[in-house]
Length: 245
Image (cartoon, rainbow, N blue to C red; front, side, top):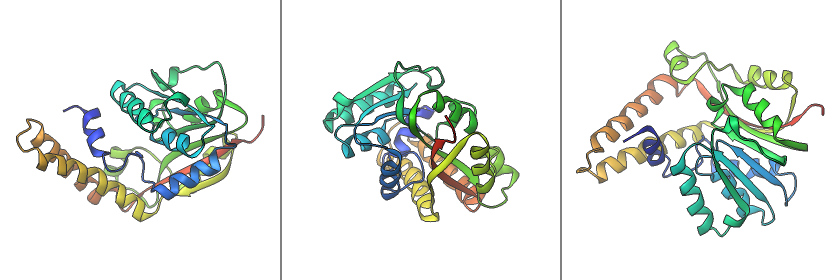
């Protein structure tokens, strides 16, 4: 089973691929969507869960998502059809960094996809290219809540603390107008959901040739979380507006 398939299984019970509960997602969209008939873009949308929720909440909203995964976009199309919002959702299979649009967007999202651009600031630079005047960016980023171990840095990346993360964003020409720091409960719920979903699938499919691999992955990832980064890693989601221009 490849990495993409494992990720899809892991997120069966937590379709938002970030440590955010439903209330947090709803609040972030309320603060991020500037008006009901907004045009919204998600760079690295995966199964487009953020866009689907926005489309259901705002009947006049139009949305576009970009991702390289054919499987994820196929799931997004099926979910949009079931929710009767497919007519307002356009999906593009390509690298998010290569996407170009003839029109700007009132809200640009990128949550958990900074690797596609090479980090936080390059992601913001890409989002800025698509932003309409008065528009907003909704972006999620990890940070170190406490001093990490070398193993945690190697595993998750070279983040800074929360204050420095926000300072970097401000220095890059953005003003935070709202934000959400994921709680310990949100982070724990996310990890339990991911590795629990994997483990449950493996136990439910003992005869599948991938069962042992999936169960081993679930056990390894759960152990890494508990032993390596649970007490040090945090996650912040920011809603930003350009400071000028």
